[in-house]
Length: 126
Ligand code: AMP
Image (cartoon, rainbow, N blue to C red; front, side):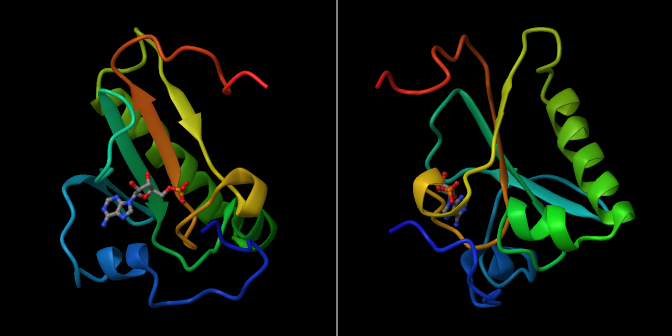
């Protein structure tokens, strides 16, 4: 069930538990601002998730409330993970689902990094 992106932050969400080390994840990268790990149900040859360490429900919450340094650190981390994965030359796709129409399932901001082969159309044809 997609979440309501306007809901308050719930620190029992699964990505908050991953950040606290309460449930396992396959770590790809971490720094002061972000943590990256492999998606448990990959939708492409490469499917990595990058999340901010801060408590933000969605891209909306983050872009409205996070300090500039945190926004900068998170965006740089997304770029760093893509470089680490060798995705710059072949290309890749970023995706952030927000709320009901976006199909967001986990109420902690996450950016999907997809790559590894041509990814096809941006959206399913209407
Ligand atoms: P979204 O629909 O944008 O909220 O995407 C949530 C993503 O989180 C999906 O691609 C799931 O496969 C992924 N996911 C859910 N639980 C885990 C987990 N424990 N470890 C890694 N990825 C997860």
